[in-house]
Amino acid sequence: MSTMVYPREEKLEKLSQEEIISNTKLVIQGLEALKNEHNSILHSLLETIKCLKKDEEANLVHEKSNLLRKSVEMIELGLGEAQVMMALSNHLNAVESEKQKLRAQVRRLCQENQWLRDELANTQQKLQKSEQSVAQLEEEKKHLEFMNQLKKYDEDVSPTQEEKDRETPKDSLDDLFPNDEEEHGQGMQHQHNSAAVAAAQQGGYEIPARLRTLHNLVIQYASQGRYEVAVPLCKQALEDLEKTSGHDHPDVATMLNILALVYRDQNKYKEAAHLLNDALSIREKTLGKDHPAVAATLNNLAVLYGKRGKYKEAEPLCKRALEIREKVLGKDHPDVAKQLNNLALLCQNQGKYEEVEYYYCRALEIYESRLGPDDANVAKTKNNLASCFLKQGKYKEAEILYKEILTRAHEKEFGSVDAENKPIWMHAEEREEMSKGKHRDNTPYGEYGGWYKACKVNSPTVNTTLRNLGALYRRQGKLEAADTLEECAVRSRKQSNTGIDPIHQTRVVEILKDTDGDRRRSRDSLSSVKYESGSETGEEA
Image (cartoon, rainbow, N blue to C red):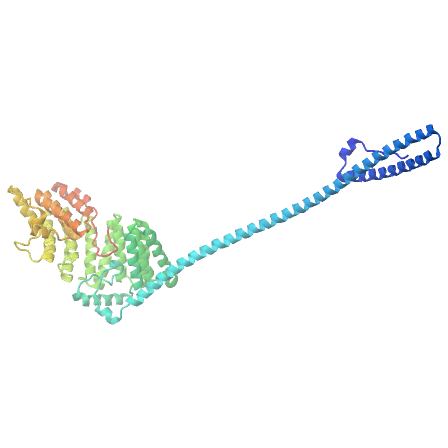
């Protein structure tokens, strides 16, 4: 009878899955052999029982056969367990195989997911670049449309030579465009044409109409405080001009002038000075040192130095600009008068009052002879000259000039002065006399006839003159007359919604508060006066 050998438990714990399966198979084989052996023994016992006749021996054989049956049943149970273990092993192998397949599928899905992420990132980058390209193209499109509009405007407004000869000169762009002067009337046509011929002989340069339009657009933005639009617009135009024409071109110098004036309005004096010096160098190189455009740049640079308080450095620049304009345009040209006004203000801030009076008187003579006594520049120059008289303590001379300004403005609006048609300063002095006689007139504005009409004369210069003369009256003790003029200035301003120069008027009051012995100190209190300028560029120092 064969025997089965089972491995010990501690050894089973150390067996691997493959070893367990192998041993299980061996056990099955051993159990199958043992089963077969027991079956053969049982069969032989049964045969023996049939042959035996004695009861005792038969009983013994039956017992042995029963034991063998039980043993066979145990063997069959062991075989069933072994088969279950084999089935379980096959199932585990199938599960492990499926698990490996799932892991492989997960790895493949992870790889595909990573690939899709990379593709998505690349697509997003391409999309971002495309959006940037679209935005850039839209900006370029807008710029090209704007430049196209400028070109169309240039073509539309370019006059024929015959129209140029009939053109009335204008001062829309002031010192940036020295060939376009103020509206002097039909009588100035011959002189303007000769000045244009002289300017053409000096270099033949004419500012393109599209740059004039661009200048007006920039000035409009700057006046609204929209420098974030004005500055990039200038820089883009400057970059385009440098690409198409090169740096050393008169158009580039003009664009540098425009950008410098925008920087000056932002109080970026260092950047503005650098641009103006660059523009000056280009214009001297390309147009010649005696070209009106060179004079314009010199004047702008002088004004910039004046705003920074560098009057000594500004004066020679202003004088050189004056010499160029006298040489090219003639000594009685309105541009010469403008330059004289600026030079006078520079000298005034240095206390050179004799030169100041000379320059103002000469400018006044040019304006009156060329533009007429009713031109706004005449009143401005008289106002500036009166300020010079105040700083020297010449109050009587200043009073005469203020009265001339108010009288002329009144005559221009309402006709000749007579007993029934008096300018406002006469009404003010009459009220002063009445107040001294203790018969003060409290008649309301609307019921005073001529006085109410006189107060309706309004302009920034006239309003400033009203306040200055009122301050002068107040210093002389004429309080009623001073109140009348100041009240009239306030009412006139409300009616016309036009601005008054409060800084200038306040400084006039400061001068008048000083005593004659403090005149030297009063010069410092009026250290900054508005420079004469009739342009939209607002040239001030």
